Image 1 (spheres, rainbow, N blue to C red):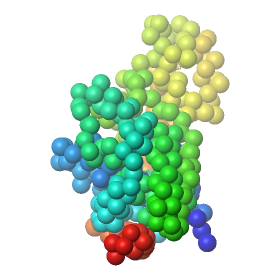
Image 2 (image 1 turned 90 degrees about the horizontal axis):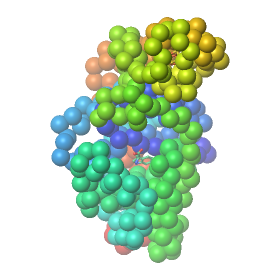
Image 3 (image 1 turned 120 degrees about the vertical axis):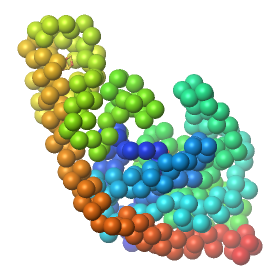
Length: 329
Ligand code: TRP
Ligand code: SF4
């Protein structure tokens, strides 16, 4: 029996190169595990409930990007969270037995509230946002997922899922839920083109689907070592965002780039051109695959409908077992 992997992503807009390592990880897991990957649209609502104009488009574009980088609907089940009704229902049921104190103590809760307040002047202290980890626990438990590949920031949610599973199994005296394990993916932090966190709201992201023109524009606008005025001045790569990117995308020539920068034997424009070309080589196959996908009418819709059917089968089975032990069946 293959173990089950499940992971979700909030459909917040076009994916950027910071998402690539997560996605590459998903791609490689497909060979070994039974995989479920879904668009967490309910989770997107917890913070973006008043601005849903682009939601459907964001979901679709995200799923196309997934497939363009190699998530294969023949191997994995791809679906949209809200299209599998069991997610809403298990969230309701689990919320009955999740202590408020667990949610209030969750490290992501306070941190996110603060972040939204500072960055966007937005108050996200709603009932739904408090329940974010319960919603996520439901996602995971419905599929008996053994492993949940996530970034470090999501580990508290996986831990809470284990606690909720344990509490449920204990209260109803039956092992209904499997306790999942977090599977930490080593995600190199890619900063935005301006050195801040890469984010749509800062306009400092490089999208996976950028074409060469866009790559040129974004990379040329990057700040380099500010104390370097002439191209023969010795540079300091340690303070340069371009160099940060070179470490990831031009690893084979990184030592040469570093010493040339320090000696002042490479200009920043030439250095940037090398980065543009590396990114273009990396991203062009994704662009081609995306164009191919877009040529097939209703392909994405078909994939998601099939995924919905497959996911519902498993999710309903778990939900029925849950309702049965709760005498709600
Ligand atoms: N909260 C996750 C994130 O922001 C997305 C998510 C929702 C998820 N449900 C999940 C991840 C279940 C893993 C498993 O990245
Ligand atoms: Fe940065 Fe490259 Fe210029 Fe050095 S040469 S400062 S690494 S852009």
